[in-house]
Image (spheres, chains in turn purple, cyan):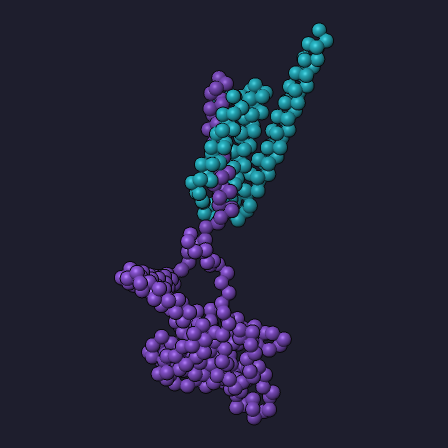
Length: 239
Length: 125
């Protein structure tokens, strides 16, 4: 008799435990409804595909580096390593670089000059916005008022003045130079910027962007400081 | 041993529910919560009956399922009539839950004091 009661209690308690757990699950992690329509899903798919293709390009690049290491004889391994280091330096922006690109003049707007509105330095928010707008395009190199803009660069306000890499950006007019991997990329970016709404943002600050047509050869300076190496350490020789 | 088996069942049920990651739609969670309440009520009722030695299998099992169905049905009716009828079920089961637990507590207390009296008399002997 007692055993039978126990069995029934056990089954009932099992059911109760299960119900409590399900209720807990439902309350803790409510399932979000997928309300995307087919176009939103397609767009996400397109984005993922873009990432996929970028990753494939990167893999191909790295494969090429590996095969170049393999094919080189022992004596020229040093050369291969030096090439890689040069490539990395170029990518990081420490070397001067020239290529197809265009220049942009940032000037005070004609109206602000006519009204005699004092010209102030460009705001850091606006400059950041501009950099983000340009960075939609991959593989570009940029120089803002003679300061190389790299991955490590920062746009900050120091003592009231907008700075790039810690150096003041002069009050307008000043020049921004952008280099793209190819001439057609440069033209694409040029056309994009011509039609971009960034002009309105600049005009609100009484500034205008004068974008010059792409040229074959634009040179920009390298990042003058050395990068701090935080993660890699040199191994002592012979180990 | 007799105590552990039901407890094991409870733990098994909870872990089963958590591991399967089963979820019910938000609109039905009301029904489930009231069903849980009904189940707990029946369970404590069963424990009380067992302690009072008036436990009956049929009453317990039928009460378990019938209460759950009744509570969910009441909630369903309430939703469709626009009256929060499930509150009635929550109230009824809540009150009964407290009463049952109070009775269980008293019975256990009596048992415990009886036992200590017995042991005292034994010591005196």
